[in-house]
View 1: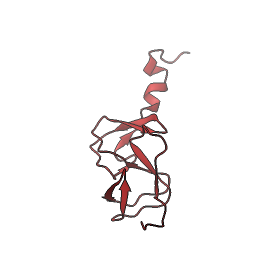
View 2: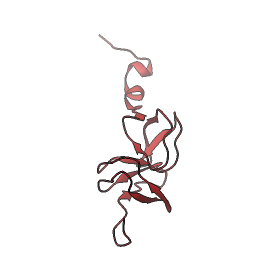
View 3: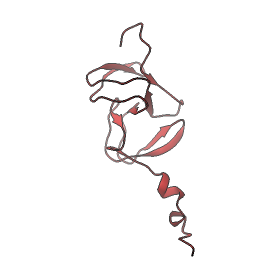
View 4: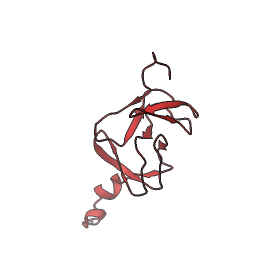
Length: 105
């Protein structure tokens, strides 16, 4: 990233612990995350997420200020947050069985 180039990362909400990519980010590229230079460890596509802070297994992932899942293994600042290290909690909290109602015939 050069001084004239806009930051390829965007913070969607102040409470978020991830940043979204505005453009493809390449492994080895150094980005500023909350003012700290971080070398990205893998290629990350537009719209995907990078950790804004170090995340521990079980931490809730916040995007747009809302929970979108949880971390399955420790993830360092600047690492890709995606299906390989995150699970969606959406189905577990929205299905009938998770609320105890069960399927009705």
